[in-house]
Length: 263
Image 1 (tube, rainbow, N blue to C red):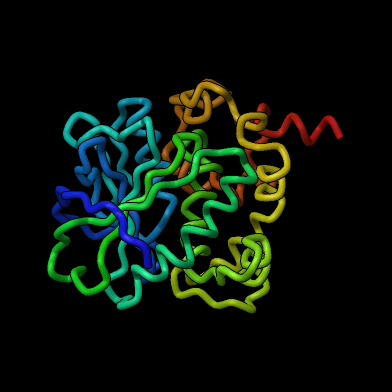
Image 2 (cartoon, rainbow, N blue to C red; image 1 turned 90 degrees about the horizontal axis):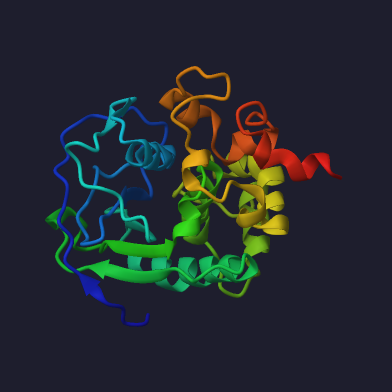
């Protein structure tokens, strides 16, 4: 396992109980430019798009117990997709991150003509995480460009943890989708992949730059197309990769689907 740079991370105190479907596995949290944890660690990856929405629109986000308040909490680092990864139950976490996830993610990024994610490590994590270690990914800001993209990135982070470096990344995705490779990093990743297949294929075929608005704010609008308030519940439950795949986002984001109609 190769050596990587260690960073001092300022941890966020866990203060709230969050209602989320996953209850174990890979935990996520955004970090600031100077490696300050923005919100408490979460298992449900959809909270990540909620935090981006709150930051871009300078609106307080409160959903299922998760909160991000731009007036109180630190700002997101918009030049990189900087996310802290943890799983205190996994004694081989570092091996899974660097030997399995890293080549998997880099191969996907090469296909998308995207800068490779840089991996780092938290220097002195809390006692609970010292055995497993805590890692930091610094991905392209394009991964935050739209709700389907950050939804895809966080899904790939989970799937990549069980990637066999001898396999092609798309083969790993298909194995997880078919249930041939189990992953405790996501209790229902096979089902998520099944419902996300069309969107994933679309992104890999066309790339994010052709599919989504160039201006990130248009992908996280403060108001819906109808002119009514764009609910964070709509964003959380109805704008991720699965919703994009099923075409559920066509009404609010017709621009995302314009290439489908040209076929």
